[in-house]
Image: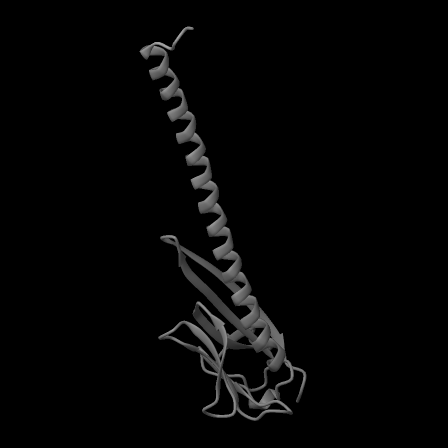
Length: 163
């Protein structure tokens, strides 16, 4: 019966250590990529859900009732008078308020929000919505995932249908 020498055992342990370290590095990279992609996907879903909620109601808004003052928009639709969307800066949430004092969280991780109205005659986007039926909304969602800051921006133009 023949046994392994000390040199053979040390070489085997060194090779096994190198292979184990390489496998752990690949697994760590894959785990980090998975969490980053999941975090970015969550931000995209939050931004799209928030944008869709605003757009759905804004499409039926009365053009003359839209008041966009940068980060807050207020408008009236056939079913609601004075619906309001704004960003809660303390908690980075998009809030829908209707009726006054009754709030609903529409989106989380919303770090920037702005509204403006396009005017055909001057081709500019301003907070003055009189005479405009095209509203532009710019929304950014951001979050920190495993020590990395992730951000996703979404812009949408909504054409109101009611006069």
